[in-house]
Length: 236
Image: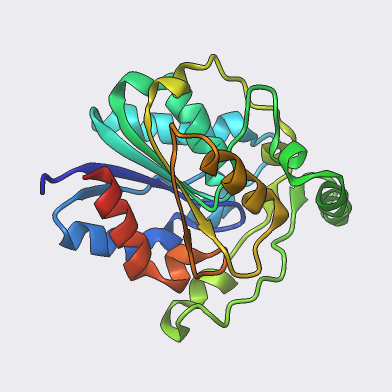
């Protein structure tokens, strides 16, 4: 199998290092793996600002692509990372081979993450943001017992999410639709309605590949071997 260039994009509240177990496995399989850091999160939490929005994070990934001169690469996003990779794909459609969404948001033009979450969850996030002066949402308590003990530090080292990343509506030209090889992976344990709804929608669309896995939402930490295998097999 050919060596591929893979870009992995994290979800909300986390660190790019949450991809380390999967990235290591993909590198062992012979792939080149790039894991951009998102401004204000994880290892870049010291750069937090209320001005950080979705465009900032899309720009972080686009900057890495430009700096590395990436062509013919595969793009993967987890959770909120689905917002980011959709924006990146809209700008770099001609350079992207495949798109993989791991239990991730899949927005249409003009939608924000809060729009996709629905009114009840959106109001809860608004309330949490109020506790931090309206500029960030603190990390939610997340069940981590399915994450192996030696990987649980990735769950406890999370940082507040800049609120503007959740409320900014994505601007898409539609070019991202030119990427025809697309996979949606749904984690079906304690599944959120937002992700089960997206899975149902893409599952009814013959232009998508889709699958379910027996995992909670943090599948890249709960089952890194399976997550790496899925990516490896799909990008072919």
